[in-house]
Amino acid sequence: MLIITFSPEETCEVGRVLGEACHGGEVILLEGDLGAGKTTFTQGLAVGLGIAEPVVSPTFIIMREYDGRIPLYHFDFYRLEGTGRAVDLEFEEYLLGGGVCVIEWPSCAPELVPDDYIHIAIEEKAGMQRNVTVEAVGGRHRAPLGRLRAALTPQDGRL
Ligand code: ADP
Ligand code: MG
Image (cartoon, rainbow, N blue to C red; front, top):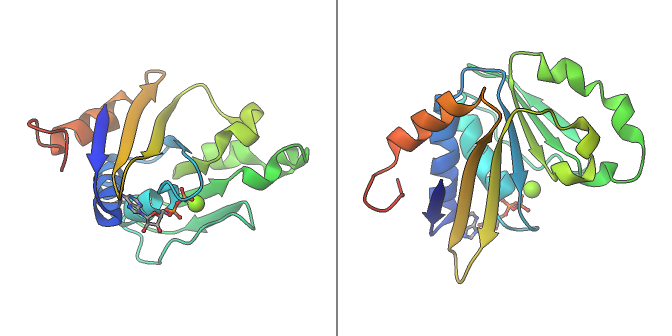
């Protein structure tokens, strides 16, 4: 599914709607260059999960946890690349923790990525346009994606 946004607020809103569609246990991979909008998207997702605390980039500490209707485990694997530190992360425990795992830069520690996830790629276009491509990989994430699709207007794929 392709969703086109034209401002940070719209990208945030797509995240919020997906957050509202989550029930806990979802894994969301976020790909995109620096400044594409991965953290902006996650800020909206957190609102949709009922998290009041503002989400900040987890880059320097690899993971931040937020409490809400559903907890958010926000990972940034950027600094794991080539360090071998991934094994210290006890990542499996977060996967089973009942919250939503969001992973920025999953390609930096592919050995941690489970088989079933929502893949989101954010691509920077001219001006403030972003192309947000959302796909379910594996069967478990079709339902929240269906709920996201249902919240989009059919005419233009936008909110
Ligand atoms: P990342 O986490 O991918 O590095 P951030 O979310 O931290 O990116 O930053 C995205 C930047 O791009 C912000 O400064 C934001 O204001 C800007 N921006 C401009 N247009 C958009 C848009 N349509 N969606 C998201 N961010 C946008
Ligand atoms: Mg970021």
